[in-house]
Length: 283
Length: 113
Image (cartoon, rainbow over all chains, first blue to last red; front, side):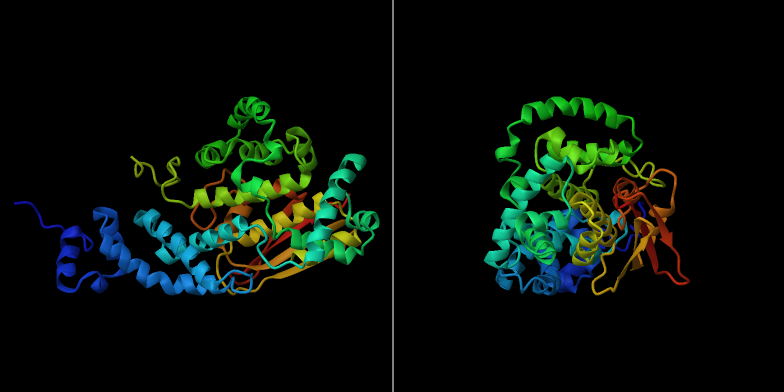
């Protein structure tokens, strides 16, 4: 006779509990098992319901940034659903640990897609535009990025105003950064030509073993920029010259790429190499 | 944090790119600290012609291990990126500042020229 399953979270034992009390009677882990093993919609709904207070709490942190909180809760809920669907019980972490950054990431992405993430006074927006033009021009002239005093002198404003305007400019992300399209993409064929060579060089680094699966999910330009900056040791200005975009744009793309890498690396479905001490688990 | 570094960069006439590297180094460190409501301190000191930036109040033990390890990087849930590799490209050098308890800091050495 076959032995009875002793696993507390076996489908059989959970089904029995569910028959008695429905999904609301199940523990969080039991619900996650049901979702993982049976794609149980009721269990998924129950988990979403339980975690909505977390979504509301996180959404309220962005309440002063010019978007209705209800919209942010909706967006955060999408992050929550993604977290539940991607959660891997085998990782040994709590769902809340995994869900929080996923929800925050979804909310932040919403702000980025909205353009200006915070309410920025018109005068500061205008100054930011002027500064960006000045930075591009001065970087060419000086063959390096300018200093804040140099920018202040060129634009005729105080250094404090330059710092403030540059900071407010971070609230804005141009659509081209996130869509992968735009006027600075014309050299895409040339870029793709470069990528073959860069990938060969990248192969020589030990980090490839760890980062390769995540890097492959970045778009080609982001991959190239990260490679040039962090593996080839180029400065942002050198990367900008190599790719044909501004240093400021390189800066934004580096941040976006690192954030993307971090998100990818924390997603359970990344087809990564077996990690230390996990040999055989990924078979 | 960014405004503080921005003002120091202005006083020391750092290029925007240099300032951005310091910003990114600090953001990368703080991004590993997921806990809400924690307090961090930022200390900026001018040493000779360079800057020493210390961010303190970090608690992520995996991050500390990553920064102290000289061998190959192994990702984990609380430190999925090779932060040490990123820092090496962003600042001249860095070191972990140990305390008696689990809290630690990271000192970044940044050239200003």
